[in-house]
Amino acid sequence: MATTAVHTGNTEGMPLRLKLRRVQRRQKLKAFILVLPLLLFVFIAFLFPIGRMMFNAVHDDTLLSLMPQTMAALNAWDGKGLPNEVVYAALTSDLKKAWLQKTGGAIGKRLNYEIPGALSEVISSTRKASMLSDGPYKEELIEISPLWGQHALWSLLNRGTSAYTGYYLLRSIDYQYGPDSQIVPSPPENAIFRDVFVRTLGISLGVTILTLLLGFPVAYLLAILPRKFSNLVMIMVVLPFWTSVLVRTTAWVVLLQQHGVVNDMLMALHIISQPAELIYNRVGTIVAMTHIQLPFTLLPIYSVMKTISPNYVRAARSLGAGPFYAFWKIYFPQTVAGIAAGCLLTFILCLGYYITPALVGGPADQMVSSFVAHYTNEELNWGMASALGAILLIVTLLLYYALNKLVGVDRIKMG
Image 1 (cartoon, helix red, strand yellow):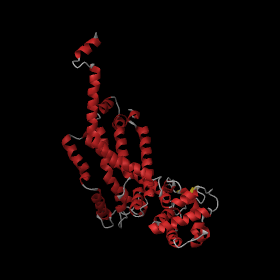
Image 2 (cartoon, helix red, strand yellow):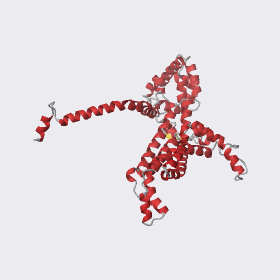
Image 3 (cartoon, rainbow, N blue to C red):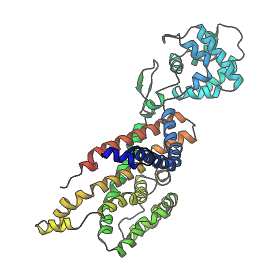
Image 4 (cartoon, rainbow, N blue to C red):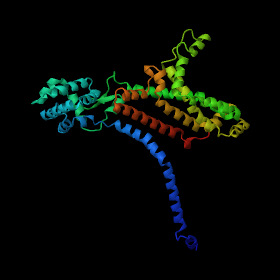
């Protein structure tokens, strides 16, 4: 009876269930079309650059594209000793071609990443190899430059037969390939990146803790104040958002310099007898970053505190709990979600800081972003820049996953 009623009630001869599904599909299609521009923007401006960065961290076809004959001849090399005359003849042909096409610099630059001094040797070899006519090429190339008689160089060229390499990622964690393509630690004078990552994590963690200690009381004050007073305090909190990061950082340079406001005030109060070093060091970096990041930690905490009913604490007090006990056991656990969100936001933003450490920090205070900028803008080494960025991204995602597991919403309980 019900089925018959449904069929007869449809004037178009279609069951209402099918008609409803059709309408829902049409609505979903309209919604998808509306958000399609945003999805395209996110893909073009966010996902594509990240994917390209991850790809560049493991992809390098410089040798494969600029020395094709040598790479093809090396496929038959067993990796022991030096290659035979056929490989050296192919190398001579590639060097002659590089001289004509002016690509010797690109080849030498790639080799120079792993063998210091290779750039000048390769450029010189392309010029001299262009004048070679007959073999044997092996002896002649080694006579032109001892570089071509090094087993380490041929191991490097042999790795270049693949368009994918682990060199940049290894270099980013202070490892490299040895003479026989084995993975070995980088020399102490070149092993700097692990310290850079530890420094970046340490500064970010320190700033996050300071913003939490400073922001939590202010967020609590905003949550309990009457609206007319809380609005005034909120304006003061968000006021830094109306000023650029560069201006705020420069202001701290003026305040913290040897004859700045802070030092003059401390000396006037006889707290110090001579100007303190507050700028171009770790102190200036953390102070400036804390000032910039404070609203990012405070606002998520405040948004959670605003939703907590004061009746919980009142009930605890009425049952005999003291002020601190009621706050710690009843109120504070309900703010953990806001604390986690604010601290995570601040920590992730701090990991990518570049301008502030560059202006108020010293050489020992530069973070990973400074080295990414260095390899991108000065050395034009996109592989190293991408590898450093990829490792930083992976570390960020792992920390986010760990924090979500520790203090996820589903794990937050009342104490």
